[in-house]
Length: 109
Image (cartoon, rainbow, N blue to C red; front, side):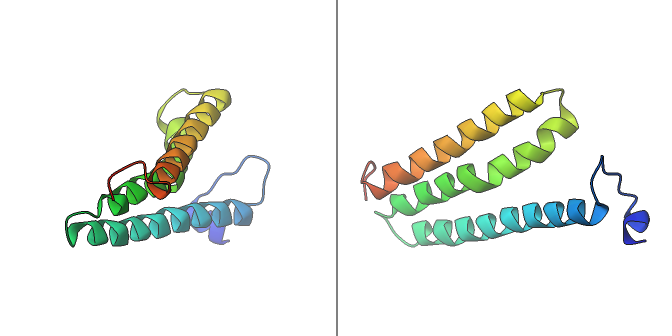
């Protein structure tokens, strides 16, 4: 009944599972954005805190952008599953690389 109200159509899966996946994706984006905001606030407190900013960028590239790509690419473009997987994986690797670069002192601290 709840799925009927929201007019959800799922291909071969239970609408409740589809709603749970969407809810978890939204929660992931919200939490990573909130953590990034805290990191940016730390960066703005004073000079010499560029690591906070690069950590925020790495976190967004690791979690938020891939989640949005997983939703936006099949919805708005004709990118196939393989292309989407490559773009999402590349974004996650770039985020991990940014975080590692920050943690191991690649930038000025």
